[in-house]
Amino acid sequence: MIATRDISCTTLPMESGDSTGAEISAPKRGYLTETFRIFRLHDPVTTPIPFHYHDFHKIILFISGQSGYTIEGKTWQLSPRDIVFVRAGEIHRPLPLLGAPYERIVIYVAPELLSRYRHGTDDLAACFLPEHRPSSVMHLTAGKTHDLLFHMEKLERTAHASGFANALYTEMLFVEFMILLNRALIDRELDATTAAVTDEKIQALLTYINDHLTERLSIDRLAARSYVSRSHLMHRFKRVTGYGVRQYIVGKRLLLARAYLTDTTTRSISEIARLAGFADYLPFFRAFKAQYQMTPQEWRERHGSVSVEQCPMINPKEDSTNFKISV
Image (cartoon, helix red, strand yellow):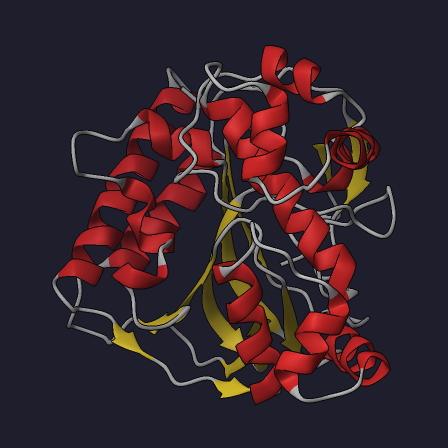
């Protein structure tokens, strides 16, 4: 059944473009209060949407309009029936033509919901892993796939309906949709779309940082590796990603530490800090508490077991405590 998390909440507005004018009740910094949420948006976006992260996975079915989508330094121009996969923790932003129609169905899903349905080697979260799909944007070619569009629209309608055991029925339809989506990827029934890399050098740097996250990653060392000055690297990285280099690294490390804290009680918190790339415990403790408003130990006590693979990189500190849900 769709579960509610026991976390302090604040009510945040939808982005411009929500035709219902509804508000999403969500905890600070982009957390979900539910393990799953689906909605359809029709109205135009009137102001640019900034780069941001989520602590949950996101699937967008682009239906109509004119929009690009940037994920971790790569940009795709969307076509109707494109499916966008945004893994928890990935920097992203939609690039719709402002003021123009922009219709899409959006699914937010918490990693722990997918973990609940893992069965042996069958993992519903596989579709979010780069090794299981050649692109973050895949195309639903008409007549070539399970009718994913039909199932996604049915899921969206059911999620906003009522009736006997509707929450349970909605979750069953969601699991069915995720099984069909993963099967479509495995059977190569979705076509990869080609992205335009915004900046080859920064794209290579993002890959390097994520591949070496637990190693020493000073800005000077990264600048030398990229053959640019420190100041040039910092400016260029911020322009492409919307985040500072140090903010990006610390945020990703905190997410890795958070996943370890959630996944295991056998390791000490000091060991987890080291495994996540922090040289000393005190800076880790201060950064974690500032980010999540609780100590690492309090996080461990509050949250259940979710595997590190399911919760890879979730949500570095946002620039504002009023995090706007954006799609």
